[in-house]
Length: 239
Image 1 (spheres, one colour):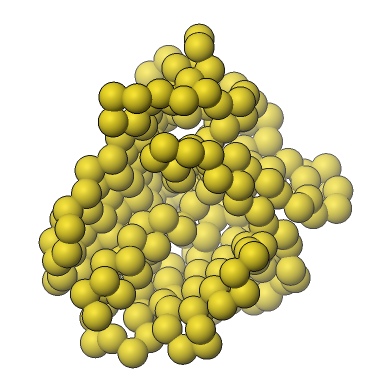
Image 2 (cartoon, rainbow, N blue to C red):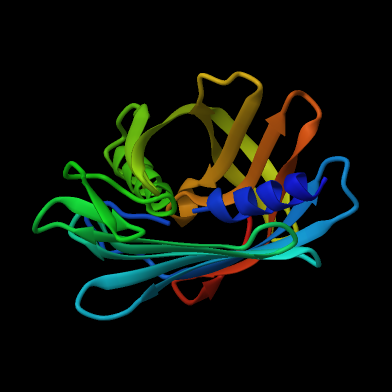
């Protein structure tokens, strides 16, 4: 059960989201509650985007419960697309603690992890930043009134690059403590059909995540729901 709690909490941190088209990324802070199927445990997730300096941004995702905490953060440049500079993942609490760090070197097109490096292609992202880029891609399609794209991302994950694929599956109105939101429903395309991940994103707020549902083997899984937030200095509100 401890492994379930830790892996589920990690997913809270991993799967939450920000934005763009031709404009610069918009700072935000969003707070989520987490409901774990079959477990008497709750967690709070927080996502935040901040401008640092010289067109550098810090995107942070954290999740905490009474059992453990997980923090992810990525520092990146924005040049009409996200360009990762450094990624860190820290987990502490029940189970094995973990502290991963990836450093991107775009002069040599490599990424280093644990004192070793491997080659990457232009456009490679990290495990947090691909979520930002997904929102940017959806925003771009929405602004052009174009068809929703099928999204493919190369993601540096410790010692290798993995492929993440998503598609838009429809539209829904989602109710939250902040209010009701018109959303786009996005699903992750997986070879493993035993796990289903669905995200509900709000076009009005540059495709900010308001709800997430992950189901494994029909029973296990968790759900996230927006509780409060600030977008570009203004409180989030529904319809």
